[in-house]
Every structure is written in C-alpha cells, then in structure tokens.
Length: 168
Figure (cartoon, rainbow, N blue to C red):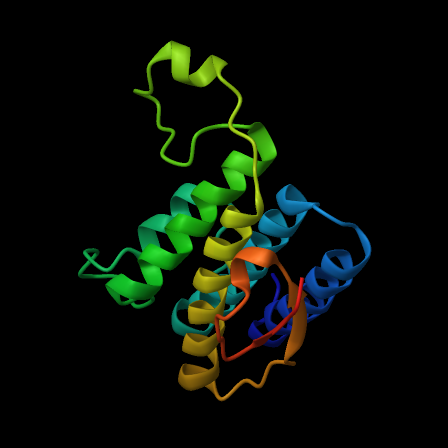
C-alpha cells in the first residue's frame, strides 16, 4: 500500500515530467492531459490514504469515497475539488481513448465511433483543474509543490498558483 508521502512524491515528480514534455514535445496535448490526470489521481489517493488509511485501486471506488454526497465517507471532498477531479478524469479518457469528454455508457453509438482529439484548449482545462487540486492538497496538508513552466497558447494571460505560463 502506497503511503501518503509516496503518493505526494509521485505527484510532484509527475508535475516536473509534465513541464518537461510540455517544453520538449510540441503539441503532445493528449499526453500532457493524461499526466495532469494521473498527477491528480496521486494527490487524491494521498488524501484518501490520509483520511481513511485505505488505498483504492479502481476509479469507481475512488469516485465513491471522494464524492461530496457520500455522507459517511471520511475522505469526501468539497464539490469544487470533486468536480475538478471528475473533469480531469473525463479529459484523460478523451485523450487516451479519443472519446467525447462527457462519454458515458449511454452515449449514442455514432458519438462513440467519432474520434474526439485532444487540443491545447483541453490542456488549458486540465491545468486549471490540476492547479485547484494541488492548491487543495497544499492548504489541507501543508505540502509545497514546485512552480513549473507550461507553454500553451490557450493559457497566455492566465495565472495559476503552481504553473508559470511562458509565452507560446
């Protein structure tokens, strides 16, 4: 079972990796969005371990324990952080499987067959949500994260706490 600190360290490593691929592999939006999600997953798993002393291996179980409407969960999140996590999950599924962001089991077949590619606008959303989750962990657990450079035209003019936007 990974510990709180192991999840945090892995997330910090992922943030640095995100900055590295962003600066070296142009337009790798799908990989960058995926790294954003897996960074958030480690942060959320750190939170779950800290609050419940459990590690959850399925996305469904993670969703169940962090859901703000799960009144008996010791690791439930506020709606804003929960929403950011679920949005990152959806963006990651889009980038990994070329599915629409809002894909679910009831999605019409023609929408499943149509590829949904990932672009810089999706990285913009992913950075926004990841920044909120990192801030939550920083405030809740006094964990400091490195400020990393991110280059993305859609992010020009935006400010974040944990990402320094460099001119694209």
